[in-house]
Image 1: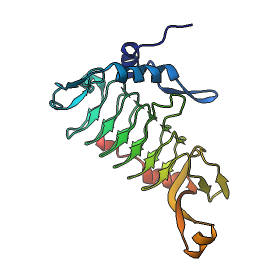
Image 2: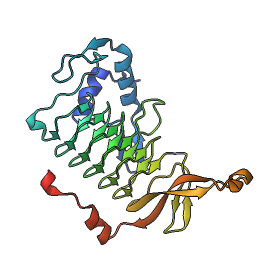
Image 3: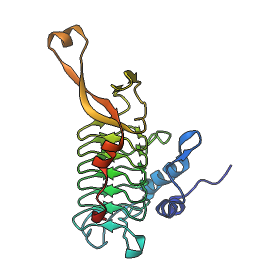
Image 4: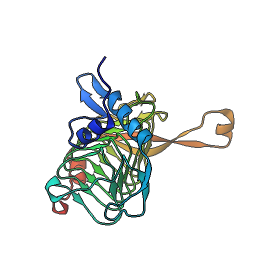
Amino acid sequence: MSKPLTWQEVLPALEAGLLRAAEPTARGWQINTDVKKAILSAFKEGKNQTTTAEHYKGFIDKDTLPIRQFTLSDGIRIVPGGSAVRVGTYIAKGVIIMPPSYINIGAYIDESTMVDSHVLVGSCAQIGKRVHLSAGVQIGGVLEPINHNPVIIEDDAFIGAGCVIVEGVIVKKRAVIAPGVTLSKAIPIYDCVREVLLPSGSSVPENAIVVPGTRPVNSAWGKKESLQISCPLIIKYRDETSDAALELEQLLR
């Protein structure tokens, strides 16, 4: 039996991109439970202390989990105004972090992604290349149970303002999630283009454009009261027109 990974080994490897809490394989996304176990051990072994890092003096957290400090050579922009990135995160070159935002331990954010204001990227969440996380987006994290997927946003996806994506949902490449959409494992997705109901827990397909919608509550009482329940609707798949509307402004970089 191989020796368990320690948090002292895992956290620097996560920051360097040498390890990931979840990674793409030929069989789909696979969870690295050893990484999650090591992160949990860092919480367990840590003791509360007053932080001394510049701009974070007076805050109290585990001594095993300080705030990351960046240098110019890291090749990212982290704009002043209250953002924080915990140790054990991977932040690739070209990433922009607008204030205030928080990126939790084990998260992976790939090249040229925009993390806009008031964005939360939860523990172990996986964010691809050239993703746009608009203002107020909440990306759920998961450390326990250790065999559960974190939220995964693949390359070139666009996540609109105020979206909430939780419970290990996978958003496939180039998908567009319109402002205000909530995605979770328990909420089925209605594909209005192909006229199919995607089962609960399904990934958002590649190139799908998803908007907030509603469906009727079909119980007798629900019908009597004309009740509706929110649900995500796929209303289109990306084409040249939608690509032009979503092109990121390179001058901002």
